[in-house]
Structure formats: C-alpha cells, structure tokens
Length: 377
Image (tube, rainbow, N blue to C red; front, top):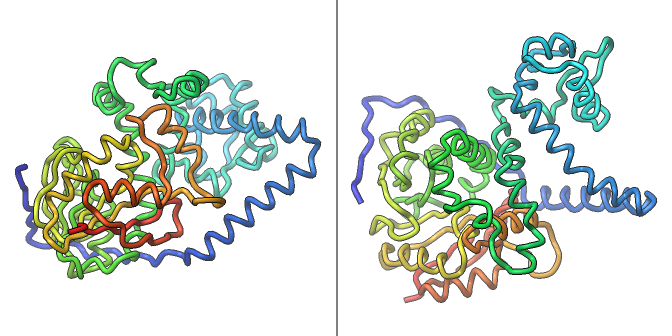
C-alpha cells in the first residue's frame, strides 16, 4: 500500500463534537415507541391493522419520488402553492397534488389553504442543504436496484442465496462503479448515516490510549475526522479505495484534523497497513459471509502489533428480545456476499476463528454497537 501524508500550513478550528445522548434513555424511548405502536395495532381491527402495515411501504415510495424530483428543496423556504411547484419542476399538477395530499394526511407535510403545502420537522431532512439531511438515504432505500431484489425475496427464502446475482451480472460494488449516479447516492447515504452517528462512536473509547487509529474502509473520513476532532491528541490513518479517498482532504480540513491523518489507498478486504494501535471497521462485516469476513479479520489481525485492538462497529442482534435493524438484515440476505447481522456469540466465534478475542461490547444510542477485540496470543 502507498501512503499519502496530508500536511497543511494551518488548519481551521476543529468543530465541537457533541456528546451522545445516554444510551439507556434512547433504548427506553425505543421500547416505549414500540409498545405504543403495538397497542395501536391491537386496538384496531386486525385485518385493517395488517393492511395498514403492508401499505406503509407506499409512504416511502412517495417520499422518495418527491425527493428525487426536488420538491422538498422548493419547500425549504416555506409553504408553496402546488400549481406553482408543478410548473417550476415540470410536473403534472393534479398528480402532484394527490401525492402531497396523501403525505399531508400521513402527517409528513402540512396542507394549507389553496392547495399549499409545507414541510414538517421530519421532512425538512429531505432537503439537500439541511445540516442533518437524509436525502440520499431515503433515495437509497427506495432505489429500483433495491426494490427489484426485494421482489425476489420468495426465491431467496427457497434457496438461501442472494437475489442480487439473479438480477445483475456483477457484484454490488462493481455495479456501483459502473453506474456513477447510483454510486453517488449510495456513498451519500453512507456519509449521512455516519455523520449522524459519529459522535456516539467518537466518545465510546479512549482513542488516544491506543496511539494511532486506523479506519478501515472509512470512506471520505467522516467518522475518523469526528474522532480526531473529539480527541486532539489522537492520530489517524484512513484506508479506502483511491477514488473514495479523493474526497477525504476536504472532510478532514473541515474538522481541522488534516495534519493528524494519513491516507492509505488499499483493499481492506484483503490487507491493512501494519503496526497501528487500533483498527476500526464500521459496517463492513455485516455485508460479508463468515468465509469472507474471516478472511478480512485474519488480514487485519496480521497487521496488528502485539497489544493491538480491533473495534468493529456493527449491528449486534440481541440473543432473545430487543431492537435491531431486522430489515437491514434482510437487505444483507438479498444483496450482499452472504452477509447478515450477527449476535454477540456469533461475533465472538468469528473473532476466535481469526485469532482474536472479544473483550467487550459497548452499547451506543445508535442502532450499532462497538465490539472491542484483541489478538488472542
């Protein structure tokens, strides 16, 4: 692997990284939300409660449609008349009204007089320039490439095989490289998710105590930049494909950490730069089968010095009951290389096969937890 060290004559002041909300409070709120939803379903006639659940997928389709067409950005400044919106965007006004009306009746827009509509606090996050925008994530979930593989779920249930290969001739990563617009949406979605959750992971460990933090497959560096900004004495190494790393300097500069980070182009599934105190792998293992995951873990362990550690940030499925990203688990079934969400024991077994020992699991207020492992020798 070649290494590029970033230097800067001066760096902007690092932003203040907010503390994450208490994990216990967030988990309680999630349990309360599920309980209220369950109560509402039990109080409805079962056939209509079931129908409401099934039809709820259309809400996502409608949100993705108006987002792709630019409607939320036009509503960002305040309420707009539906006819004027349709005229500006080149849309069929009666059809647009029907979609906006349906979203308003679902509490996702506000309908005013004369067929005017405004965003709610929730749908403001569909705007491109919103500081907590989830525009790309909404588009990503509802992309035709995803809805098409979900339509093959019955076939995957019969065979246990991924549906992606039945629809496309190449794997997901190659396909995204061949379709730049889709790659941009996917990458943007991952950046959005990381941006919102990064403060929770940044405060989960005493990163300076490990020396250098090596972020494997860290994209443009959103998570690593957040960690370095939260811990001014820490240093970092960011590893990803050369094309992805092109956007890293701007991200690192925005957080004021350019001089404390190196860029290393490489394939994190097969190798890692050697000798760093902590290796960080977020949302990598869940997309890999046990066989491919074991291959990556062995490569990472090979790079670790004695006393080195690995921090895996991923979904940890509760052993019995509890919230987890169950629908993301099915996305892995349909579109990944045999990937899946794993329990703590399954992670521990996978680590052990690679010569690693699971030391502890740190719960976070996000849907992902942090698993800290060390070399078993």
